[in-house]
Image 1 (tube, helix red, strand yellow):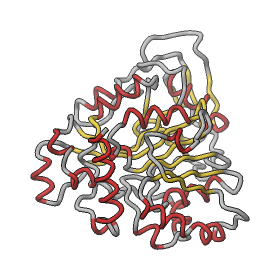
Image 2 (cartoon, helix red, strand yellow):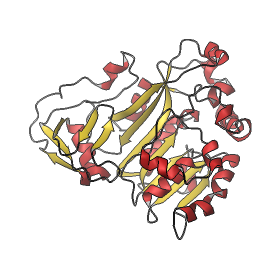
Image 3 (cartoon, rainbow, N blue to C red):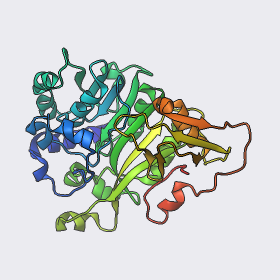
Length: 352
């Protein structure tokens, strides 16, 4: 417990006092290299500059089809992603931002009245809560109450990642989605790196080994997750690079669903999926992950897990699923993502 509290205190110090803006970061690990789609760039223009300046994220983990959803952002910081999502869920939706750092939450809360007016809402659809992402129950976030959980380069900072993911799958509704960006390592990070306050604050010290992440999700009952995109972390700071040594780091954007019907490898049931093109922000194609890009109106052969994800999540109304699981044809003709990880791809888990 003492070590856990020390880690939390170091993170709070780094993000509450040391970092004043993105320019204070020593690596690009906590700087998003993803280009925002046009519909998000349009919303971004309506955000106050202070919210954007104090954004420390390694991706753009904001999925499609959020209108009317209840969304939880873990480690919301100054609130950039919360405010982007606020515009997407609409006035009838709800966004909860959780963070443990007073300095960050002060910025997020101070801009709430002005941002509510800019979005044309009669009342805020955002609530910021101070607390720990390892214990959402203490914040009175109920079981099966959240449609989508987001996080942007924060889970790596947690000293108890198993508790974080356990809480995520507790609060998600059946069929709900976890969609997050974070830093992962190609091997287990040595203790010397984990103990370094700067490397921890730069999102390197707490990076999970990708295969340990896969094992953890499996232990919690999630047998399949998908990598949406990835990038290698560039360590241009000579001092940081010297400390890190041979460990390679990547930023991954990952999605997983709270579904009981998934299998631990991709199985072939002769199914196909057709994207109907009915998500307003994606009229021409829908990207499920880095190797499932559904062109509008074009049938695509899929494994049983992919068909189930699409059919049993909030995306079901945007797809036509052809076939069922009545006939099994063996493994789906593709290698699991874990085999790509061995080739330096940085992915793991079942994936077709």
